[in-house]
Length: 245
Length: 45
Image (cartoon, each protein chain N blue to C red):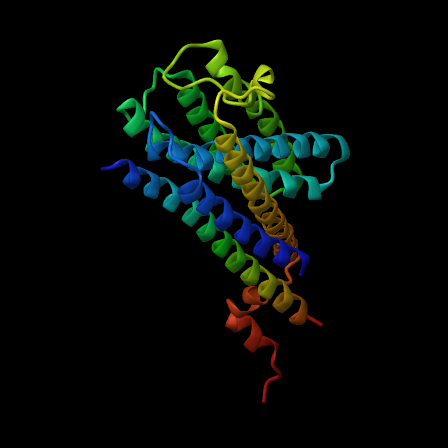
């Protein structure tokens, strides 16, 4: 019930932040309306970082405590993170075309390392399908999740370490937190969108975690031979159990 | 495409994608819960 309330609050927050970003905050002097994409693009990227951070920490926790609930949390973080990374890339492409003149440029370090991040976590999700043994799957996934997390700071600092098309951080740079390179109204709209996306993220993470626990329970049921469909698939066996007349 | 078109495409896919994922997740959860419940009801003697 609490999760359902969180879902409604998140929905209202996203609608409010989107209306603010699209209609209330003025357009940028140089980029025009295209700059409005920044609110969903940057918020998606930050949420993706947080998701993969959860996956890495939950994976580390699993390796230490061997608790499958932590593996379920790691899975939830990875799946939700893949979605938000894809959104960040999509938003960036839609922003890049009118501003840079191109949707994508492989020479740009931020774009390429973000594409690598997406590929790494899709690989993480695929790896999980290679074995039915929950403990083995969780251990392998935890190791891969930790290795893949190395790319998160590389993505974030790539705009500072290398030159490319992508602009530098607006407020993510420690020196710009109190002196952002964007007008305060834009920064507040971005923070509002980030808060709304964080609520959505929390809701989706909880739901995906609940689903992961249920999937694990279904695997356990199937392993113990309790699934009714297994009996129904063998009608001859059921008939043989009936006494002869 | 105009700037407004790119803005619409970005917001539409991102917000619509979140809504679609939430709906699919709710459906998967409902099916999984029903299956778990059915398995527990149909336990063999």
